[in-house]
Image 1 (tube, rainbow, N blue to C red):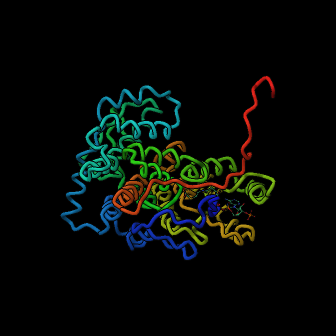
Image 2 (cartoon, helix red, strand yellow):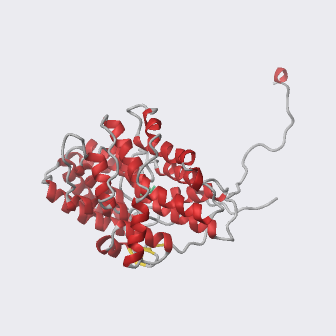
Image 3 (cartoon, rainbow, N blue to C red):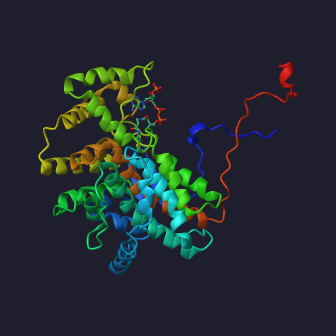
Length: 392
Ligand code: CMC
């Protein structure tokens, strides 16, 4: 019989070759096409990073302008998609809506579903990067019962998203540049992360030749789980549940208790066994936003700061190299901006879309790539004969 290597959770199996993102988990290093994430987050901005991930080089001024124009040209959603939103219950989780609407794009944009046509692949990619903010903002608007706000192409990517989420027809809405910058950083810091669960899902879906919208919808579905993209929502819910600094020791004890399934949400990472480099930038951003909004004394943040301090000193966390991850701080920023926790993971999905697309395009172009088809170690019954129901 064939013998296969057993690697549950793929901790030691490389599923592909990739030139997009490099991570050294022990050093806490994350590079996109060779550029350090910290430098990109402080000097660059999301759309430029999108270009870098997709095409491999930083754009010239002209290339960036052309790319930005191409993206802004596609920010509107097909008007009929509004009807699709209205089919969801108001209390549907926005991740369910985003997953459904992204999948439904293949029913609205037939002219960009042929994976064998490089031009169609390109159009589908631009469409998704352009439309994900609109799709995500509308999921939010639908949940709060406010009218959908159409995209504004004179605004930058992050400001346009904030406006589509928070503007209402009755009032003028001006985006604060500090908030827009913080939003852009959240997008940038989540843009790609090599072969994580959702990206591997997108590649696996794409390996069968499924259309790009279906593949990205598969990525959204995978991202939803609390061990992955759902961690930012879970982290903030946990901080709120803890509620005050004096209750932290009780939760630390629960996290350490092996008979208790509870884990400190927003701590630990499969790859980073050092400080997550994204978390460093996110922490700075959190301080900036909270200073602007004047919520330094917010109890959730006090719990977060104290929890971080205790966990960084406690031998249990130190020995296991459990540091706060990116989701620990992003949740605090999004909360301060006024997003409900249910929107945290959809915002992660919006940000990660470019990474999924870059990886999907790389896979399609890779001649060595075959349909993904893991094998198994069979542990079931050996061959046996069928017994009629009356004789069992
Ligand atoms: N709280 C308490 N103990 C933990 C935690 C935690 N957050 N994370 C890991 N451990 C312990 C775990 O119990 C195990 O202990 P022992 O060796 O005594 O059995 C040890 O640390 C190693 O854990 P593991 O489960 O083998 O590590 P992993 O690489 O499989 O898991 C993880 C990584 C991210 C799933 C896990 O750390 C976790 O569940 N964290 C909380 C959820 C979270 O914040 N996820 C976001 C990840 S970053 C964003 C993203 O990629 O989407």
